[in-house]
Length: 210
Image (cartoon, rainbow, N blue to C red; front, side, top):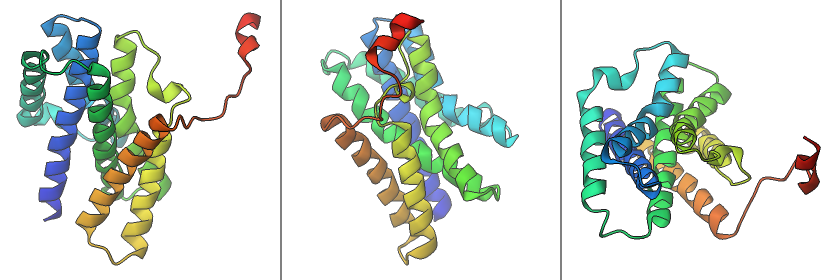
């Protein structure tokens, strides 16, 4: 049962981040090949870094389904781009769900490897965030994780909630997974809606001193 749920989460996460990458690339007016590349690195970037850190085979190199899903999602995004005019909203929705879905996958990989809970949360955050970091760097944008927006913080909070519920509650494992994913999406959404931000470390004038 757990494996089936994890498979569904991985599929949905791959689709979500592939859509996120596709719309971000189209927002920058890249050609179809560029859209496909950005969709691919967004969907597999975090998981690739995670697997390299765990010293295990990189997941997508042995899973044709992942590559097929990314390719099909990118094509779908380009075909139906005329229907969706507001790239910014669509990008935010898919990026938020990808963030939640992949955070759980990364965290579970860490637990399966027998790592410390803090390291597991770190792996979840890496899995959720690094695809977006690579995407934004390739698109010449400052990655969201390096801005004041609540992004990685949502992953960390969600990872902590997951571990607490899994260990101390009597809720089913599937319910804990779904609740954590939704919690990350909600935190991210509320942070954007109400302009929650991380505190600034530097004043506005410090840039002039560089």
